[in-house]
Amino acid sequence: MNVLKKSLLTLFFLLFASSQAQEPEILKRASELYDANYNMDFESIAGFTYPEAVEQLGGKQKFISKIDADYQNPEFRKRLQLTAPVFQVGPVKSIGSKKFCLISFRNPTRYFYEEKLSPGEMNEQVIKWKQVASTKEVFGEPNRNSINVKRISKFVAVSDASTNGQWKFFNFDDLQQLEIFNSHFATEKVQLGL
Figure (tube, one colour):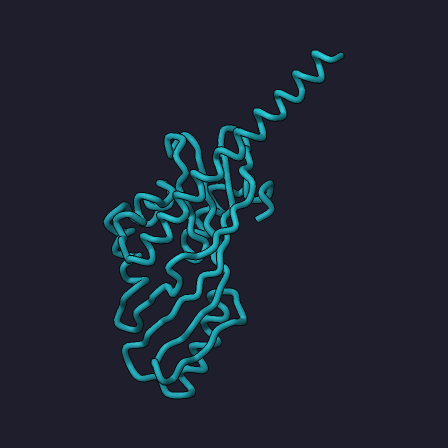
């Protein structure tokens, strides 16, 4: 009985240590992805993104162009406000040969509009961003001609055969990436409770 008890404790410890060892790597990679977004390093963002998402969005060059247009276009310029966000890293969940981890963090973002917004247009933009960002914390800033969106952002880290065991991400702020995740991982999404 003593040998069985020791074996079970050893197995439990190894499983626990294995899952804990993955968290620093996920946290490090999520932080690097955030930094790439903060610094508008679109090439690095493409490298951190789940390969199927990049492919479905037209390949690497089109993906980079899309991200660039998300940050700066004729309507507005997007800027992240935090230099060091606090990440909440969920547990690593294995489903078949795939591993998943949900990372969430407070991510205030400011959108500077190129054309001066009238009070009515600013109100329309506030309403639009509340829907797009799924948050009630959206504020018009007339003096800056900007909209301040305070949201909780989510990355889902995935490690599988297509990533060669490395952690790659879906950014759920990007509605197209969210759609691709929901389609590509429909079964896993339910098991992950997303």
